[in-house]
Amino acid sequence: MTTLRAAIVPVTPFQQNCTLLWTEPSMRGVVIDPGGDLDQIEAAIAETKIVVERILLTHGHIDHAGGAAELKEKLGVPIEGPHRADDFLLARLVDQGRTYGLEGVRNVAPDRWLGEGDEVTVGDMAMDVLFCPGHSPGSVAFVAADQRFAITGDVLFHGSIGRTDLPGGDYDTLMRSITEKLLPLGDDVTFICGHGPASTIGQERATNPFLR
Image 1 (cartoon, one colour):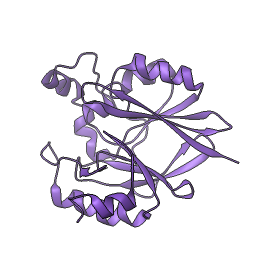
Image 2: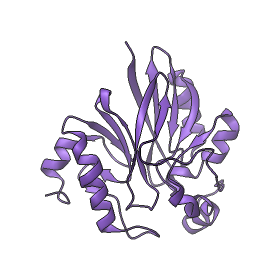
Image 3: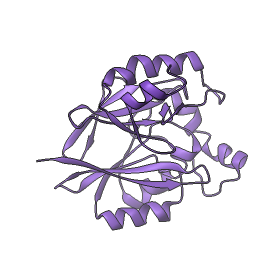
Image 4: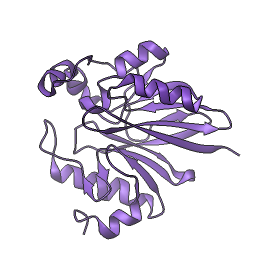
């Protein structure tokens, strides 16, 4: 029986949840949102003993994508995601790094852009791609419906939602993404978000002040 496993590695001064996701017993998987601190990410890969087959990006902000280009070179794997609408962010990661005082950041171009209805492979499992703009124009989420599990990036958090005051952000668009794409997944779906603790759709529907 195939089981999906996850390990979270908080990286960068923003404490972004870089997530290792893999299936057992295959021990093959992905790195999601390697924003930086690659030494910590590589240590987690070694500790979990997973074989990384690709890098996935939920969106183009520096704390999620700043280390992707270097990690791609080190692991020799492709980068998939986010949606093409975040191209302008990924092409200016170095500028973002200067703004926030982060070193070692490189611009990146994904090997594959993602959109609504696409699938990404994690080990022996396929995850659905949901296009969820609002926090950024090209944000995506990854959903394993059979496992009742999702990766939401910075769209929905435990007790909060993604900020919309950054370039390309839009509050109304974000709320539509949450209410039309994420909430219909079902209250029993557990999700890992871009920052902070994991939650469930049901908990956020009941207690998140932005959704009440």
